[in-house]
Image (cartoon, rainbow, N blue to C red; front, side):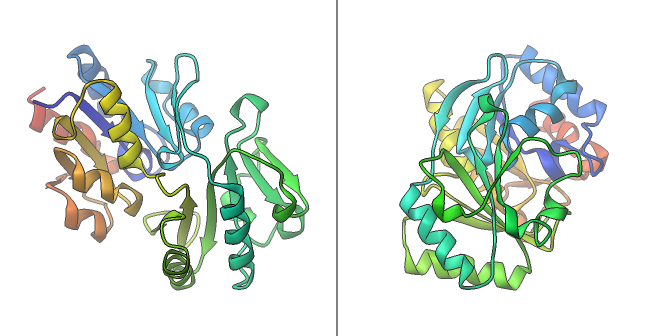
Length: 277
């Protein structure tokens, strides 16, 4: 018997216009009414995720930044937090500069009114596609290496897929067990994104930790997603569902592939079928 349903946002619950199809909204409410725990598991920062799920109009637990920060939307209360060690952060910045890679840094400063830090001199080089023109929740600094203790949730590199895959493999080989990272390919802002985080920072580990607090076992969890940052939770859950529009890596580890994509409310269609809603 399933007790918890974890749903990714982009490419999954959201359509390509970043709206939630009405059928998906209805199915989330039906799940909650029937006693299922519904969790949003996203690579997005908490503030952004909270804006995108407003139409659901009910309190939800959000695993943001791939599970590095978990909050309850009813009070914005922190449930789980995993911050990257500052020394590991500096090593990462130094190594990436050698390859002419310059990141965007996500931080847990929700109550302070910002979630992102960027380097001023690199503005325009990589940030234009990543930050929307009306973005207000960021701070500029001159040099990441001068950053004092900060609650760093994720270091994001956007750009050429091959270059990012090579760097991803390099840091994991040279610095084993110091980072959790993955390359995302099912995106619109760039050819690929490399996300580097706390070594225990991934959706599945945080989801499993949250479920345990609720007395829910991995076998009682359904997970749904579309990109490579969803692969672990789809592979390890009691029922892992890949979207029809998912990356090949995700489809290969899924128990089920939806018959409809994210623009056709594939989440609602598959959950109704599996749970007989």
